[in-house]
Image (tube, rainbow, N blue to C red; front, side):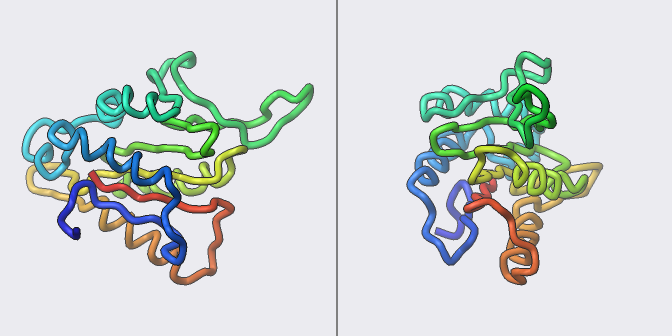
Length: 181
């Protein structure tokens, strides 16, 4: 189903997707009318927080803790390492986290490829304690300026194809799910 919604691919492509992938992809399918970027790019663009809010209830039902805002109490921090007294010495925030499945979810709704946020997500998520998988959701189309369109899903897929195809750079993650919405 090449033209299906959402578009998605799991890496490494030599491994079958884990069981959690299908229910997570279905959440995006269920909210297609509200989040589909090929439709939204012609109108008012959603922010990543807006998309996360639309998906929140279903993500929480599946066991994800979901960021509740950009204030310190609303963010989800995952440690990178621990310092004195067992306190996290360095942490990064993540949009959603499933502790049993050890899945970190990042939702990008704009500058993902233009601002190289994809690379930041790949590196930071690779450093997080108790995160074995990254689910990275990006727009299929991102409209900017008067006539510019960035095909974020295709660009991100090309990056992951190169990383996994060359095998020169190896992530400590068991896998990455790329979702294009």
